[in-house]
Image (cartoon, rainbow, N blue to C red; front, top):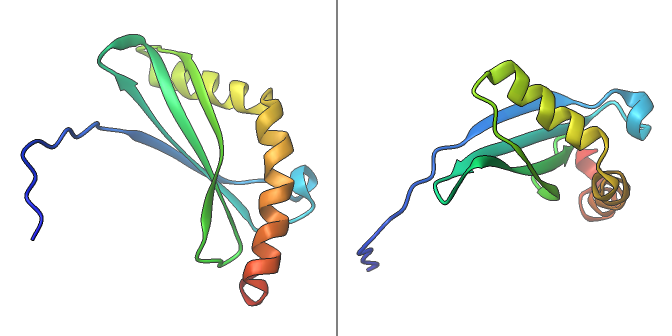
Length: 109
């Protein structure tokens, strides 16, 4: 039995989209971004970028971003997507993730 004496829940928001085929050579790559402010740094938003290929059961963390916080939700989303588009780590890690999924679960892609 597990007893938890304290549980800290951090509310997050999220984005989800499919990458265009011209971005990665496939039309079945989904990206989801979880993002949240942290109480200790209220002027920043932390983002975790996940990828999934086809119907594969595996989803992988392909990038982490930190952006400025904006009260305006549309502006916040714009800033997150802008940062993702400029992320060298995202561009370098996504192809490797796609290749690993094809090897691990070829029947799902």
